[in-house]
Length: 527
Image 1 (cartoon, rainbow, N blue to C red):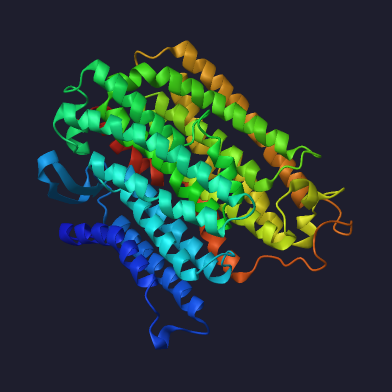
Image 2 (tube, rainbow, N blue to C red):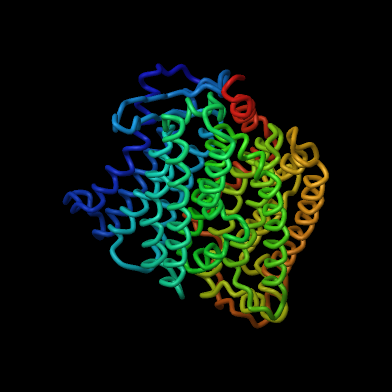
């Protein structure tokens, strides 16, 4: 790591949050004559790659300058009074919990901008597409960096409009209905969440998340904590998405363009689970302990429900859409994250944070790959792809087949890859939950989660068999010449593969950051 002064670190974090908004405004301006390239749209797409690339470089510099010896301490902090009457402050900072999510967000947006430069989804003006992408990045990055409850809410809501338009204007079939379902579910959840945030702020006299976490709920009565957890938890559960509040997700993923699905799965779902860890666990521990068994139950049901839905979609003759299948797999995978959080133990919460990052990398890669399949075949329908004998990707496009097989085995939690550690730690946390929680209940959730891992392996291996294997000479939906991985696809996907392997073989890279911060979080700010 490198030694960077606190003032430069402070500037880097502020720059990371402000640059996407400045870039979005610049994207809507006419391109300077010397930068237009072959066409006006090429200039604005190049602008998107440049801005997201600069933000990624700043995020890497921030990571290198981060003091890894004290990851429980907030670093690169800014604390300025904003709305004095409500005691609302522009309070920014990162610790070992938020830094990995911030870095992963910057990476995924850069890879999506790079992919879109070569494969722009069909829709209106590229200027609007790039501007919306950058506003979306600003909201997601801010969610992981703000330390004030009302700022968190504003950042949380900031992503809704750009994602709505990305689905509604650049999506596929049924995009309008899917976009409306997405916005209605998340807005209704957010209204309830705002009431819970105001309840905490007005009862404690501050909206500062650091001060509230250090207080550990002592200023809030048990009834206030229960009401706050119920209200905020509903809003976060919709975004996560937790069963049974998940029904917007499959429609949104199926209709969204490829990069929209990558960002929805890789980044937006993490905002919900991050809120559980950053807000509810340290600020309302009493209320969380009351609701933890119910959260664990919903998580366990979600794990099995998502897997069974995927098995049904993967079965021959069911006309299962691959994008929809991966969306339902997200319900199952995020169930493990919620189960880890529900244990209220360092082991479980570390597992949840690890699974968050692993899911972002692996499911982002899966949506890239399914988007590439849909571009080549003109459909993501599994029966059409597989035909009578299988799509035979190993024979027709071997590198594409190898990438898909890798992503599938990573998603099913193969030891040695990133997907393994988070789910295993979440199950370990359920084996020995926090004091005061029902151990028999959590042992039951652990057993159900274990069954979910078997079902996950089942449907993903069926997908690999039907898509990657088969007779290359058999009649299928494939065009006569099926192109293998293109150079821009290789550039966009390889970093995700490399990080999936790195996190799987060397989990201490991530756990070394999160564990001290989680220990301090659960101890009420006293490490």
